[in-house]
Image (cartoon, rainbow, N blue to C red):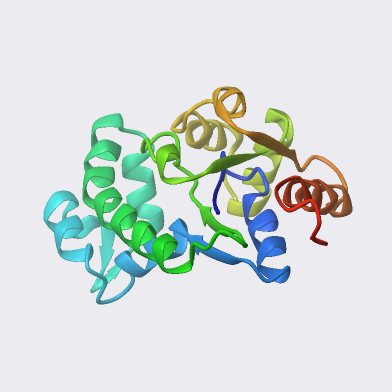
Length: 198
């Protein structure tokens, strides 16, 4: 069974996917795929340089912060970057999901832009990781060293979290001790496989 795991930036999705990995489930990580496409020698680098120029590169290495400053402040440029990366990411995710999908276990697709990229149909169920907006902003500022305004811009660049929660099959609240988050995950797994320990 294929589970889509999503949320918004700094909601704790990596914590949840890490816990699922620790339980032995295979996780297909969209961010890791994106990083590999934009790492030195990555398949998307040439097209990104053509589209955005040398200013977002340090030699042959993509300057992710510089690129982020460009795309998070300009809807058109963000759409341009997405048009380069998303088809490559989606085809890789589809291949990995197919390779690990079996009826008696879960394969997890950790996909931040699952709804934005219209990928819900690729999964049997979608779980959304959620946290209050104030906590989300605080986490981004602490994690990425951004100002409150920059954090809000990054949040606003994604589909509203409330909309994702409304569409989801389940919502995992990470605004508490990690043990609470883990308990929610185990309960969701047991709702799918009632006779099996999560």
